[in-house]
Length: 437
Image (cartoon, rainbow, N blue to C red; front, side):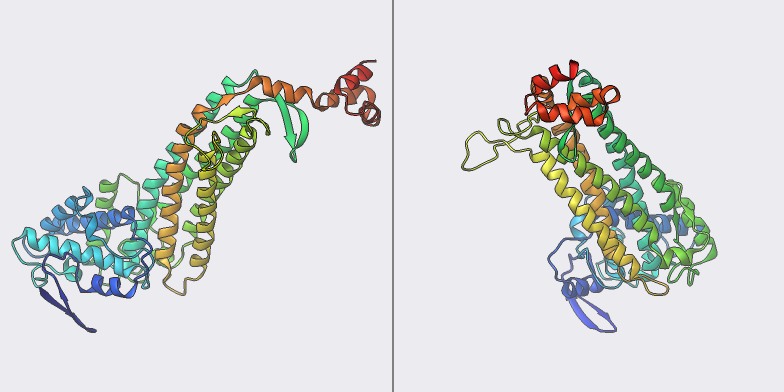
């Protein structure tokens, strides 16, 4: 066992624990048993710690071997070998300080072990004086969230591109299948099944473009701004050097914000990104629900398309198969919409120079991104690509409707056509004959 002390008191920790006293306090204080901090955010934080260490190496400051060691253990963490060491709850007080300290303490203790010292020997490698040198949670945490969000946005944009392509493939495949159009769930003019899928593709294309463009908003970061954005306790050479290293490590065109205090206190950019994720969720929900309706049946519904049978749908009704993928996608969309409300509310509750609710913003945004990336992939591979059209059923429903009558209104007038429809008493064939007369 080792003893660690802060101004609040002393805590005993097992020697093999890589976290320290601040993480231990957070584990005790925030026992929500909800979920841990996103690993995407952790990895982004670790990348920032590596960039800082590399910058200090270049500047030739610090104790011999410490920053080289920090950089090396950051690589170990980024390889996914120490995920279990990051234990803070996603939702926590303190604007993310507990997660930043979890990262600082783990890196410090790993570096100590690498250099041949015992964990907790902070006179050799200190979580704050060395790992967190020139930093604050208030510049590190928002920068890490921006990095993680950009990385995930790129994946989501690509997933949308592939979904768009799958929808366009179906647009071409179904182009010759005439079916009944519907407005307000009522019979409308004839369209093709391909046109419906083409419209879906256009909606997803807009989402793809919006998500691609919004990355620009996230590239401005406040790293080097420390507590409130004015760079307290951060050397000038470090502030200019760390952003260059961070660009190299991430492959992202990050730039120091023209006004770092703005980035530190205001979170409207995350609200904007979340709004675009909500827009994608709205489109995915609409498409999914349309597919559920077109697939309904197979005897008592529309049955214009057939979704791939993926699993049995009932414990009491033999042979029943449900549209489980569209149902899943709709639930993901609902969660993304709920997260958007959480992000908007949290961002609005920042006071003065900092927002205490950054953990909720981070967790909600990264959850939405992760859900949409996976949902778009599953929607494409397990639903869209496997859809089969029921051309005869589409034809039958069309022939049972009065949709064709709209073509006669330019010649006979709206009122005359309405009168003929009424006189036909529901006999579509009789209506056709009367109109042709």
